[in-house]
Image (cartoon, rainbow, N blue to C red; front, side, top):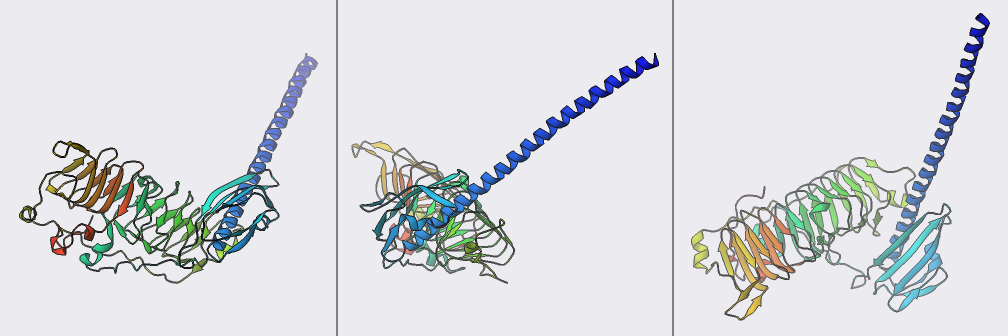
Length: 450
């Protein structure tokens, strides 16, 4: 009996040993597979990062050459790093095409350069670039830099360039054309607030809070008339290729990854770099805090990072929000509530302007020009295909526009909101609509936008 019990016990122990060996083999196999996959994934990820970085360097160098004199461009000169090669290359310039790495052509920087290429490496990873390099600026590549308004300057002295003044700005339209203008926004700005063209073309931008742009291609500043961008908070330019024109002042931390910087950036705080920023020749980042970056970072970018004990401070003009005049003044000046296509001066509580059939004129009216609109509440302008030109003032409310095009300037306590897709917004000073400053529909003074 004892012998029989021993045989049974020995059999069970052998089975356990075999099961243990089998399970161990399975676990070792799984762990090995995961490790191999992890290493392979990391290699592919690093490979993709390297491709993006090299493509960024190629485009940056090409952009810098295209701001100089006429030059000869050969495809093979663009790809000097032996780790990478071009699988496809196509460069269109005026009536000339470079269709491969062996082609060469004379290039005039006075015409834009349409560039497409696919960069590949030995890991069978690829990265495709499709971009347009802008033509050289007129007058030998120089740009006109406009002086920003003097901080604390009087309100009337700044009106000639005041485009948008209010607590917020949301834009779902197409483009904003504001060369020579200034925008003052009190609330934070985020990617969801506006589409790609929201602040492209605006010379001076003042944001009295943080700016977070992660995704999309919304740029900041004017390429033709760059000025200054002041951010009284953190600035994040992370995901999404975007152009930043003019000098930038940040009262907080700065996170930078995909943007192309055309001026200098002054950061009174820390700087964090991602893999793929690019810089115009002569552009640098001056910072007072710490620098965070990936390992093995490119030296040509690090050379532009300059640590300082102090940097120029953000200067948000302390502009008072203008108070409205008395009701009697508007009546004396001929303000009314009659909507008409030309030269209307409206005054009321909440004002809505829409396209309409005008029986007296015998036509459909969807274009309004040379208007001045003042509301004690909100101003709403809406209709598909509607075009509007004028000055809008809402000291206690907001302005909402949904139409085809807007031209003019806006002062609204609760902000300016363009809700229609495809809309173009163009800056026109209040001086374009009201000749005499004494006829401006507000007082010079009052509270601030909160």
